[in-house]
Image (cartoon, rainbow, N blue to C red; front, side, top):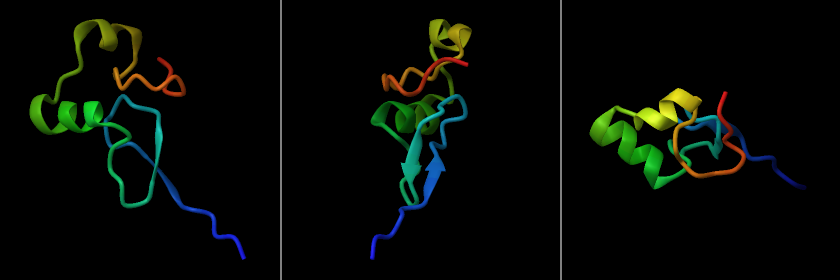
Length: 60
């Protein structure tokens, strides 16, 4: 029997990556951005991305 893992959205507000349940962030970048600065670099914010670097997390 195969169990599907529940997916959740990365907790970084501008990130569109999915993470496994119990893992709040998709990358150290997103964790650091939320926990230490709460800001996204200006060029990333203008493009609508979060800067995590994952190709699946495309700007909105």
